[in-house]
Length: 309
Image 1 (cartoon, one colour):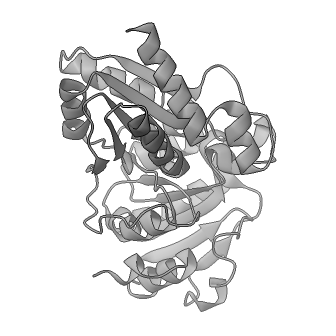
Image 2 (cartoon, rainbow, N blue to C red):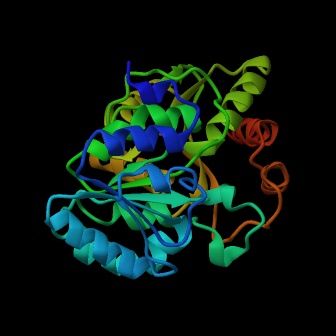
């Protein structure tokens, strides 16, 4: 089993991968939160460009053209928005294997205001044709998939997530394959990232209310597990897309596009942020205020069933 599936530290996992392959170079735009303890142990393959995300991406593209695999770290909002044109043009058009690690995405931005909230990062990154997107649900999930994402020949964007493990995850990680945690006859919650925990809590509440509920941890949003989504759509009465992202361009959009492409009709209910940013606060308060706790998610789903009874 990959050592990274057992480590409790992203830094150690990344360091082991980097030191085992001289092609890797770790770069940051003055954001060392995820790597602050390993920079001196990377065999000289660490660069801090300062607050210059666009320059960092250009440097990474140049290194990739010369056979390196750059692993970039920056705040998700600035990495994907400030650097978008450079990611698209310098990395995307050539399909370079540059890895983008976005810190504090979605609700993990917590007390930061709208300027620092990455709620459109998935939408932006999925616009770039060769880009893969990895959204681990917790630290263990991140470790399990990290090596596969870093060794992929494609450019990749990862939503960094060092939250405590939610469940014991399936170690058989494959890019484009979902982790089907449970199946239900009445509703399936499709989710990714930190909201997996709330999805599982919502499932438990729904089960006590007599609704058979399934939960799917999608892991990668691009490529998405089409089979898992289509199976859920064909077998369940309601699909719920749950995400800490704008409804436009994220999982809700991906799901609807997929269903239309395959001519599948299904009831799809989005639970995401619609045309608004979230109120900055500690994470538990955000989840409660914005209606993303397990109980509130279950309540929203139950109301949907009552409307369509």
